[in-house]
Length: 405
Image 1 (cartoon, rainbow, N blue to C red):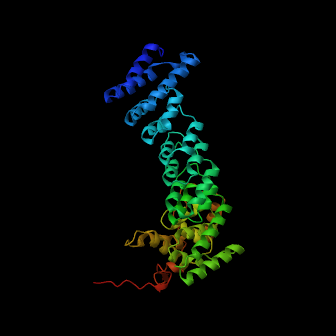
Image 2 (image 1 turned 90 degrees about the vertical axis):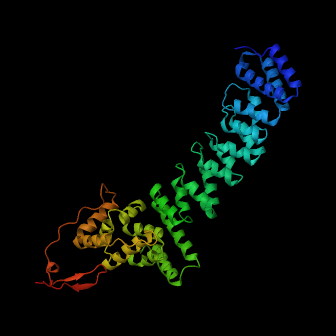
């Protein structure tokens, strides 16, 4: 490669003295050629310092569109003089953007200086870099600028420390958009996710349960807070508040022994809160609790209820309420699923159901949650004239079929 010689320097100085637009554009192009075609590392320290000083001075005199063109050309190059790149990074955002976004020459200290001294748009460009260190991510989100924070959280190459996440989590209490952005991060600590369970929407509560390995004790505290939040909602009915108070007292005493007490939650549409308390009642993880409620029709739910001595009428109401609250508005209830679940309930042996629930509690879950219905033993109830229960648990007696001749 050629050195930065006297002839090149003389040509640059002549171009710099010519103010015509075509000469200015030629000056920028010539500077780029020299920067990319010169190995400044082969020069002596004094020669390199002189070359960089000349280039910086010439850059200062160029019009903004020409500086931007030069910045775009140098943004992805790793041979440009550091001082020149730093100067471009601190220029107006129209010039600085490509360098802040792409240049690998800039180190954390130089980028931190831009974060602290330049505009929000400069910070936004840095937030979208391919890689961000923990220190840079923290400095970018501290000012609380929504667009910059969003860019950092949406950047898969951003490393975010626990303390920074903790600040963001506390800030998200009243910001639903920020809550979702935080929870979508794969590097979010489950302890912080469980803390957010207290104030996020029902949909995000389910997302937390499905995607984070939350410690049971942390989730218990989150459920307590969630109950308190629901109770504080003045739009709720007095009856529901009374039910919630009783549930809370039962939790405090460790005496939540009646799944029927949770029926008002289902009727009020508090599905995620019911899911949390159901898992606690059965004694399984939140993730397994949701599987029991929604997989294989209603069969695992039937088995769980029968294995924990829940009355059939309560099971029926809970199943219907859950399916209605989960179905799109205007969608009819799937009666086939309901009848299948009730038939499965009738075919279950209570002792066998209890054993299966115990296995779930021990973490013995492989493949399907429940087997096919066991064969029913002959009994008086199988006789044609025996009392039978309808889908709501009410008894009626079969009538002989009337034959037509």
